[in-house]
Image 1 (tube, rainbow, N blue to C red):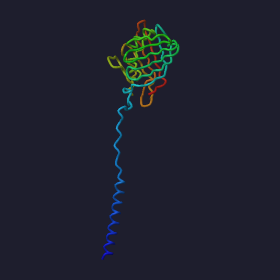
Image 2: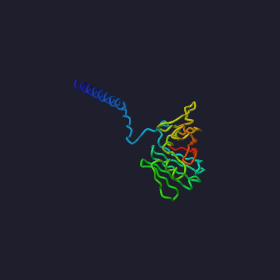
Image 3: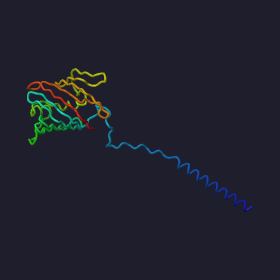
Image 4: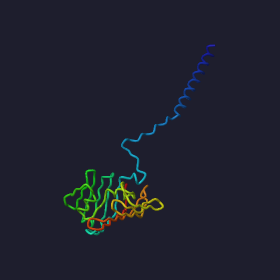
Length: 212
């Protein structure tokens, strides 16, 4: 009777250990799903449309025909938000090197080793120093093929919705040669005309390279 009881106890212990082993294995097989990582406060989603695009670098050429000057210059344009920009002109039109910088505090222009000239508005500043206006505030929108905020006259789009022509802020603009740059469809040639202080002015921007 004693041997039978011992055998039963050993059998019970074996079954208990086996059951616990299976239970532990089953629990280990059920992986707990990790919660999705929260977006870091410093991270922002990449812009998905030209209207959201507010930071870029551009390389190209700027041509000007005006009573004060005729010619072209190599252009490098860095933009960071609506008010912060740096436009670097080099070549005959820039008389060597001209740098136009903008921020919330205003706009400055430096030609070569000359002292900076400062104003509140880029168009006013370039008219004063170069003899022709460069409307950088509006160009922040125009370069993306968008009208600037505020009043505007006639505008025309093609069948794909691309802006082809626009009347705004005293300028008559034509947009052409739209090309895909990453996720954005952007114009690569913009011709703008206005009646300046001393006569008609034509500014042509040809964009060769975008950087985001």
